[in-house]
Image 1 (cartoon, rainbow, N blue to C red):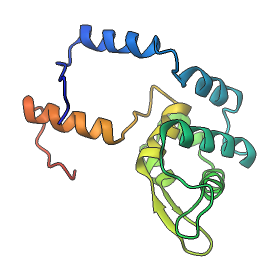
Image 2 (image 1 turned 45 degrees about the vertical axis):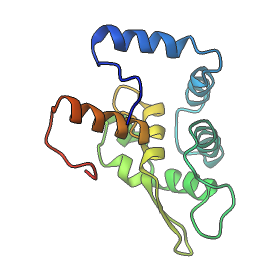
Image 3 (image 1 turned 60 degrees about the vertical axis):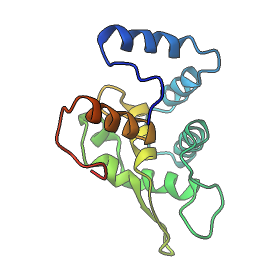
Image 4 (image 1 turned 180 degrees about the vertical axis):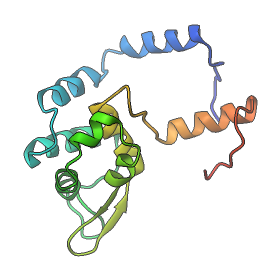
Length: 155
C-alpha cells in the first residue's frame, strides 16, 4: 500500500515533477548526457556503458558476473544483435519485450521487462513509458481507489 497517497491531478503531478527535478542527487542529467552522447545501439561498447549505468542507477538487478542468468555483457550484445535503432524511432511496441527476453549462447535466460522499459525510455522518452514495481504499485492503488479500468493485479 502506498503511504501518503497523493491524488493524481495536474497540480500534484507538476509539484512532484518540480520536486524530483530539484533533487540534488538526481541521476537524470548524467543519464541524459550518456544517452545523448551515444544515441545509436550498434557499438557494443557504447551499449554496455548505457546498460551498466542504467542498471546501477535504477537497480534493475542485472549482474555483471553470473553462471545462472545473462550478464550486463550478454544484455549489451543482445541489444546490438537486435538492431533496435529503427524500431526505436517509430515506437515499435514489440521492442520492449524483445529487449527484455535475453538468452545466452549457453541457454541461460532472463526476462527483465523493467530494465527494457527503462532502456527504451531513455532512448525515446516520448514513445516509451517506464514500467517498474513503483508504477505497478501506483496503478494498482489507483485502480483500487478510483477504478479506471478492469484488470487483475498480475495483468
